[in-house]
Image 1: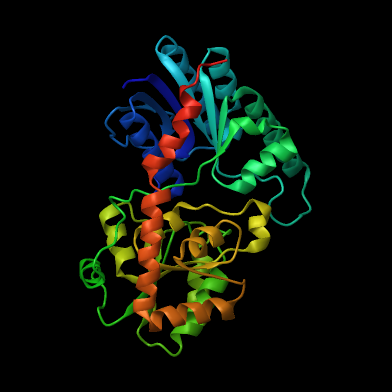
Image 2 (image 1 turned 180 degrees about the vertical axis):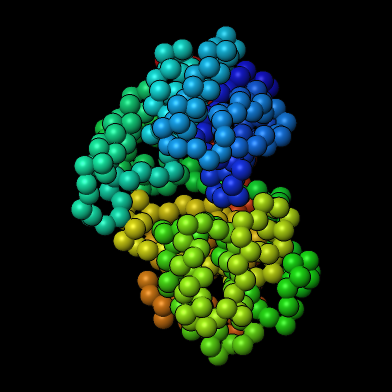
Length: 390
């Protein structure tokens, strides 16, 4: 079945191997598979997907104002061009795309907005200057405009949905909680020894892995100190840090301070999904530490946790809203209280008992296949996109 043109506008750079790229590309891929002719407005290179036509929003690394003008200008031009055959407009990263949302609604498109984060009600209270206060007010205004104009809203976690309804007066009938997903065909369990060989790693070692942005919302201090404590009595333990980001220099400094430079491998961004699958497959344990004061009441629903589950590897995570449900709720690992000691103990216990870790990994894989495929994400989004525009 064909559904006509769908204009998908995402203020993201798909040239970077992070979760925003994965989400954008996979949703576009499966929308096309469901019968939409997808007009994709993004920055970065053409993802070369069947049924998806790139409408480049300009260069990758640009100043904020130029970026906003570029992506909205390209999006509105595409909406005008496709207005005779266009049916819906799917928007990601709502607050910079208010002009696109307004234009799509005026041109008769059915607007669906996907929201994966909001600043309101999240993290500790901080003293802010005039610029921060104005930015907060603008983002809140953008949320209200989105709430009025959108026919449907995809919230990737329960906390976002509740906040949109409670604090911004958005009709709960418009909001659907649809978590991030994973490509279970690409990210799948592999034989650990073969993955270690393919990844050119030492087969005598046991590996803990983190994948994702090396950014401030990840508690690398706890994660690295916990690994160092667990590795102190386990000479075979190694940590793979797969990713890059603004906090890499401070992470490298802490690695040196802890004296674990010979135990940690930083790979940088990994674009090759086959290589990513093998790195995950080489691990005994996947891990992530969060700063609860940064997460706040919204919780988390990261792509990385879905990928950990799909890889069939046990997970050790900080016990925060969202992570607890994905990990312990599926029997896929352990959610530990904040702090070095609890995480070190959990890592050490699973490194010592890979059979128990792999049993958790198998439970995680079953959950990924049942609940977290990108196809299921798009199938749950379709009802929002296919109703008649009002």
